[in-house]
View 1 (cartoon, rainbow, N blue to C red):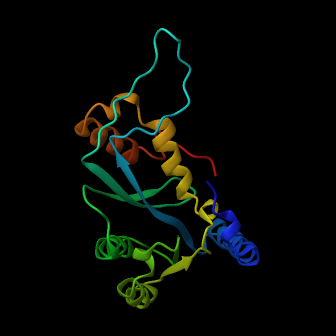
View 2: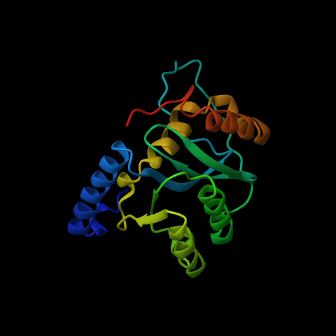
View 3: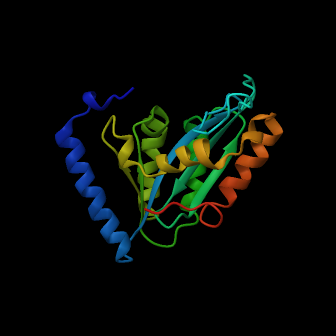
Length: 193
């Protein structure tokens, strides 16, 4: 299901053009550019496409219960800064995550985010002034524009391609396989932007 029809196309086109300009600034070495978001991983598998025979189907168990949430920032060179949580990510946790990231930057850095409530909370907006003083700038996407956030590609690749079937056998497997993938983005797991 798409919510594309709800977005303001003029705003989308304008922001898309601005993001291209930010990419050019990154390519010239003037800024670092990261795309940020959160994603949920649980024991209900995301079924990838797979060939199977009628007599030997691929069956994956589905289980509710424990889950993992990942918050991440990724650039077009596959540098990934992330945290894994076994609980919901709220605005306070996201602010702490951004504080840790801000302490690592070495030049003017732009982080592109969607309009999630945790990104738009009053607490988060208040921190934006402090981060700006540290050369960390936040750039918000227009509503209903996930295709402008390149980290969405990462979440899809993990869920539909990189997590092995055995990740869904138990929570410990899921956690181990997910951590392995996240730690090896840019090494074993690569996205060409």
